[in-house]
Structure formats: C-alpha cells, structure tokens
Image 1 (cartoon, rainbow over the protein chains, first blue to last red):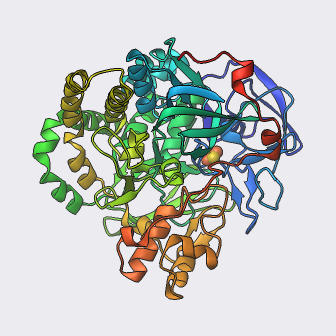
Image 2 (image 1 turned 60 degrees about the vertical axis):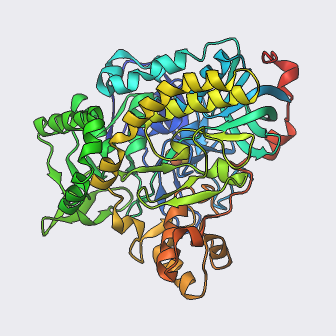
Image 3 (image 1 turned 90 degrees about the vertical axis):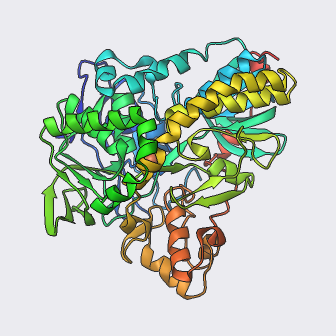
Length: 101
Length: 467
Ligand code: FES
C-alpha cells in the first residue's frame, strides 16, 4: 500500500482513513493536509501539465503555485489547501488546464 | 455583508499583532485568512503543534503562540479558511468560505499578506520532489513531515534554519549547495557595525551553522550552473563549486534565495510599487505607519518589504495605532507614546538586514536564467521565449501576453512575475521600474460559479461582529 516515500512522518501512530487517488486506495491521516499526506504516502506527482504533459507535484505548500492541483470529487482544488476526509475520491485534474471551470 | 472598523487580510505575525492592537484600542476587527488556524506561514499551526515538533522547530517558532492566543478577544472575529478573490474601494472584499461567496467592508483595510519565496528558476525546478525551502518548513510545522535525502540549494539564513531543524529531527540534508560567494562576504563586512547592533540575529545564524557542521553536512559555496535532473522526479542535482563540477544523487531538492513581498492584493487595487535594488523585488509605497497612497488602505509585514517576523509584528502594531488614531479612538499624543518603543525595537530588528542582504544576495543565474529554463511554471514559458518577445519589441510584462501566455496560468504570475520583469529590463536596458510588473486583476484566486451561486450573507446566519 505505502510506497517508499522520501518524506518521513515524525508521528506515525495517527488515525487514518481510506481515500482513493488515481484509482488506488491510500490510507491517509484523517484531517491532515492533503498534499502533505499524499507526499507521505509516496505520491510525488499529482498531475501532468496541460502544455507538455510534464509531471508536477507540490512546490510552495502555501496556495500560491497551483502545482498541487487535483480533482476532488469532481472539483479542481489545491491539495495543499485541502484536508483529508474519509472516502474522498482524488484524481488528476482535467487536461484542459482550466481551474474550476 | 459583514462590517467592522478594520479588515485585516492575513493572520501571520503582522496581521495577528495588528488585530490585537486595534482591538485593544476599541476597534472592531475582522481578520480574514486562508488557513484553518492562525499563524501565517512563519507560525503555521503554532497553536496546536505537538511537543516533539516544537522542539525541532525551536523557540523562534513557538514564540508565535503568544500572538495566536492574543486573537481571543471579544472585538476580534477571525474568519479562517477564507479565500479572498476581490478587493474594492470602500474598502470592501469579496471572499469564498465553506464553498460559498460572501463579502465584508470596513472603515480601514490592512493588507498583511506576507511574503513568497523568491522564484528560483534553474533547470529542473519544476520536477516533483523539488520544492521551496519554505514548503519544507510548512510540511514540518503543519504535518510533521521531514524531507529525506534532501539537498538544500540557494542562499540565506532560512537555508541554515531548515538544515539545522532537519539535523535535530535526525534527517540531516545530504548537502548545502550555497550560491553566495567569497566576494559577497567581503561586501557584507562593510555593514559589520549594523550587524553588531543586530547581533542577536547574527549569533543565531552562527549557532545554526555550528549545528550543521556538527552533523557533518557538507557545504559547497559559490555554487553556479545549478541543474536538477530526473525522469519523473528529482534524482540528481549538479553544480559547479570550487572550480569543480559536482553531481549529487538525492530524492528532494529544497530551493531558497530569499523571500519577496507578495504584492498580489496591493497591486489588485493599484497601490503604487517601486523597485528595491538591494532586495531585488518590488515593494509598495507607504509611510512610516504603513499607510499606502490609498488613504484607507494600510500595509504591514513582509508584504510591505522584507524584514522578518519580528519586524512584521512591530509594523502591524504601528499600523493599528495609526488606524485607531485615524478613527478617533486614540489621540496623536497617545499614538506617538505607544509607538516610540516599537520604533526603537524596529531599528534594532532591522540593523542586521543590510549585512544579511549583502552576505546572501539573490542567485544571479536565477534572476536572469539561461534560455531553456522554464520561468513561467504554469504555462511552461522559458527565459528564451521572454528574450525573444523582447527582441520583437515587447517592453513590459503585460505586453508579453500578446506573444505568449506567461503569467496567465492559475498562479497569475506569482512565481514568474519578477523573473519576467528582470529579463525584459535586462534585454531592453531599462530599469525594473520602467519595465513594470503584471497588472493584477480579480479574481485574485479562482472562484467557481457554484461558490458565487451559493453567495451567502454571513451576517444573517452568523453572529454579528462587535461594533
Ligand atoms: S503546492 Fe503550491 S499551491 Fe499547493
């Protein structure tokens, strides 16, 4: 389940919930910062750019760069500004590059 | 619509300090912030950080608790999770909260939206696994996450702080790749007297360096030609230092060469800005109290010019004192009496700045990147593209939009604006002031039709602020 991640959690004994990311089940910290929890779970690439298809992941963690865009239950959002909730279905955002069309 | 005497944008050190000072003076305060908890980036989540993390982060971080706790005041209403997308004369702001749009107005507006990492466009800076050093700090503060097999690249005290914190957490970085040179250090020595007056800051820096040395972390200085490579994510970083080419394997790269004011909010209402040559960024025009040329709009903290968390806090208080006086809650004499010790503290706080600015200048290669380096991350526009636009007669950042799409992606130029200005200024041999910056227009952050449709009047379903 948990792939090798270059991000280490200082506290591991935390309540986790199941979410889906790109069709795979992940157990993430309940209420945690979504971008951080995905990184901890070994997901570094969150999306591909609409221009060249290059992989992107969180860069600023403060809502400014928009590189962490994901689609949560059908709505494009910044993962670094979102919280983990049980059962959330996360995917790569649409390739049109529109934010919240 | 929500109403208050003072609207504060941003709950970092400047915003929190201003809110409390204004509330103590009898003003009703509405504090709007994007995060779920107060602190801004520097004190992110300071109110509920577990003890083990607090130990690693150190007392410079945990001292922010006092500011966060001080928001518990009957005259302060703190709206968390609030994304501002428009500011208008009034002053009035429109924002989204809990999936619904809403608005607020006040007699005065204080912009305290802080700083952004200075963009550091080097080859490979868009790869997953490459982040700003500030991002790594946020991961640690908010989520207790440590970056492993990390290389820190760039310059400045924040690089040492995060390296020391990583050492304390038992995850020391693989190396520090520092861009400042011996000549920079010599130039900085001319500001030694100032540095000695601000000795606390300098002593802190030396303490951090000692921690890093003790952990055996290699430091490369005078680094140039930095490039990050990897197939889907960062795998290596290469650079030249001491006349030799180095190639280090790594899993994460943390970039930093200073922070710059986040000017989006102020620019969106046309607060005039000018170029600061030493700090290599635009800063808003303001007086000693933080009043901008728009008389109802004040600005404080790093968003008004980089001074660090303590200076931000002091500026927040000064702005609040002036606003209280403006609104007739205190006399000019009282204002000045309360301001005097703050101004003295500010002087000490800023004394070491010229030394630090000279010792750790921005990385030249990242100010004017090589042609094939991406500068606009959103639309993947390269430095070469911008130079080509300049060759075709493009003089300013807004004109680039006639040639390509730089600055038109979702980040709205936050991480390319300064680079685009610099490249165009350099190509056309004009100053940054003459070259200008992107025109910032609402929405400052994307707002959905659904959120607009769910427009709510917070006044009706929530408790009214005290007036
Ligand atoms: S990581 Fe930059 S916006 Fe989320």
